[in-house]
Amino acid sequence: MLEGIITKAISSFYSVDTEEGVFICKARGLFKNKKQSLLVGDKVNIVITDNVSKDGIIEKIIPRTNILIRPSIANVSHALLFFSIKNPDPNLSLIDRFIVLAQEQQLKITLCFSKVDLDDGIRLQKLLEIYKKVGYPVISISTYDNKNLEELKNTLKSHITVIAGPSGAGKSSFINTLSQNFNIKTNSVSSKIGRGRHTTRHVELMRIGTDSWIADTPGFSSLSLSHIPYTELKEYFLEFHDYDLNCKFSNTCLHYKEPDCCVINAVKNKEISLERYQSYLQLLEEIKETERRKSW
Ligand SMILES: Nc1nc2c(ncn2[C@@H]2O[C@H](COP(=O)(O)OP(=O)(O)OP(=O)(O)O)[C@@H](O)[C@H]2O)c(=O)[nH]1
Ligand SMILES: [Mg+2]
Ligand SMILES: [Zn+2]
Image (cartoon, rainbow, N blue to C red; front, side, top):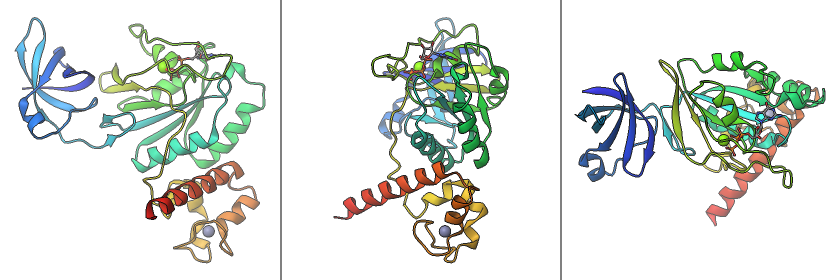
C-alpha cells in the first residue's frame, strides 16, 4: 500500500499526494459505516485502482496527532498567525484569541505582521514591543517589497502549517510567493468597509517542500474561546508564568482583582503589556458570561 496525505476534499473525492504523485481517491465503505470522517491533513494508506488515470481507494487512516476544528484539518504542527499592520488594521483581541487556540493545541506559533511597506514608523514598533515581550517569534514582512520573506519561509520547514488571520491581511499573497506554481486568487481590501472580501473559501494543503505543507484558510473576523474553562485561560498567557507563582493565592489567583497579585503588579510596572492584560480580562469576562448563561 502507498502512503500519502489528503490535500483536498471535494464532495466524496480526496486528493492524496504520495511519492508516486497525486491520486484522486474515494474512501472505502468502511469509513462511512463507522461514521469516521476523513480530513484534509490526514495521513492515509491507499490502494491504486488505476495508475494511468491516477485513481485509488483510501484503506486506512494513520492515527492523527491532532484535529483543528476551524478550519477542519488534521495533523497540524505549526500556526502562522498572520496580521497586516494596516489595511485592515490589526485587531489585538483577535491575535490573542488565535494565540490561545494555537497554544491549547500545543502548536508551534509564529506571528507575522504583513504589509510593513505601509508602516508609519510607529505601528510596527508598537506591535513588536507587545508581542516580542511575550516570547513568540515575530517576523514582519512585505510581499510588495520582498521583505523578510525568506526568514518567514524558513519557519515552515518540516511542518504542516496553518496560516490564520483576518480577511485581506495578505495570507494568499504570501503563499503565492512560496512557489511559482501557486496562483491562489487574491483580492483588494474593500476601501468602503476597510475589510477583506473573504477571497479564500476552502481548505487545501499545498506542498512547499519534501515534508512541508501549508494550508491557506479563509479569513476570520471573530473567534469564540468559550470551550476553555475560565480558570484555565491564564495558562495560555505565557508571560504571566514569570510572575504568577508569587501571587498571594498563587494556585487560584485569576489575576483579576485579587490582593497582592504579582501579574497585576507586573502590568503596573510595564513588565507585562497592558494590551495583553486587557485582552486577558476581556476574554475572561466573555468566557465567564457564557458559562453563566449555560448554567441557567
Ligand atoms: N501594501 C501591501 N498590500 C499587500 C501586501 N500583500 C498583499 N497585499 C494586498 O492585500 C490584499 C489582500 O490580499 P489577499 O492575499 O487576498 O488576502 P487574504 O488574507 O488571503 O484574504 P482572504 O482570502 O479574504 O482571507 C490584496 O489586494 C493584496 O494585493 C503587502 O505586502 N503590502
Ligand atoms: Mg486568501
Ligand atoms: Zn495573580
